[in-house]
Length: 209
Length: 209
DNA sequence: ATGCAAGTGGCAGTCAACTGCCTCTTGGTA
DNA sequence: TACCAAGAGGCAGTTGACTGCCACTTGCAT
Image (cartoon, rainbow over all chains, first blue to last red; front, side):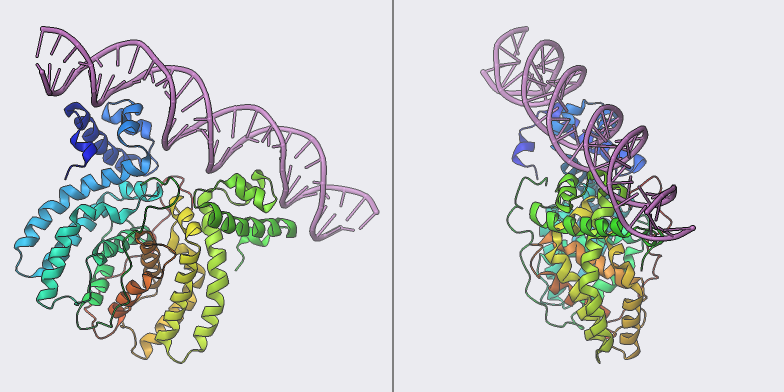
């Protein structure tokens, strides 16, 4: 899904943007989330000015880099999941794929977080698919009926945030995914309070991302 | 619980530190999480150098400011909770107090997060009390038996992270607290994967906080 | 193949977090 | 009360994110 601005990019510019994102992931992985943008630009073989032209600040860059990683791992996972007989297992495997990537590239995640990015946006492009999988699981009674689509990005955001309470490369987050899945079960369902909108009007001031 | 360094502070220095924290909370609330440290120092009536002498960087300052806020609201909540007949309700009310504060002072929370602080540490001082309350709830069978003390700070961290997916001043987090509490119920308990240690060895490099 | 809009990137500059240095002030103890 | 370690804070400097300016290059539509 190309945005308006992406649609207009010249091929060399698009290639550069792609390279910058990939470099960001590699440099963050090597040098940690505090890696300098100079280093990323150099690694990508472009000038720092080009990096800033494409990604207005570190938050946008790090989030885009994270999105690139998630896209690579979640797209095939979703394809698989849509064919799965058991919709709960299917949903589980998509979450698993996203979390595994997040844990593996936790430095990129940390860079995005530290720059103030709204992490849950990173799975925004898969909102529709997650919603579909959720609805299927609800239809066969594997997930409580009062779940709404907005719940899924939030559950992902919660799981992401766990990584800073443990060795981020570990799979300790699985314990809490299990806990949350128990909460999603129709069996234990205390009626949920109303859902509030996902991120309201753009925040005041000139915030990055 | 004064640390070694706090124990040695001269009374005027302690008063200044206190003032700086309170100023940080006020300035963040007014000017947002990107408020400058200059402004905070000025608001506290101290020089910038004094602010940095006491709090080596923005992450430490923001986290300490958040801890001050949490301390003010959680201490009385815990006192009440320890007297409560229903240990699950008691636990709930402590979490409620902490989350209400976090939502109210979300700018301070955001400043800490953006500076790279490990947010779950902010409830570290109440670890013991939370553990006690959890154990009580387990003893009367209101909470699944395989919960461990480390789970509670992590649940708090997950709830904190929700605030960036909604109007942070709203109480939309209650929906997910409810969801998690369902997951904590002994009824729905799928056996949980092992717990991994809370934040392993101090992170490599010279990270703040 | 050629013209131009789109893209590139060096350089100098701003801004905020943070540090070193050094002198002046002050709480609390002998 | 007099001393001194502890604290305060001004100032100049460093670093990294980010911007404006501008001359140079290059896809690509005609």
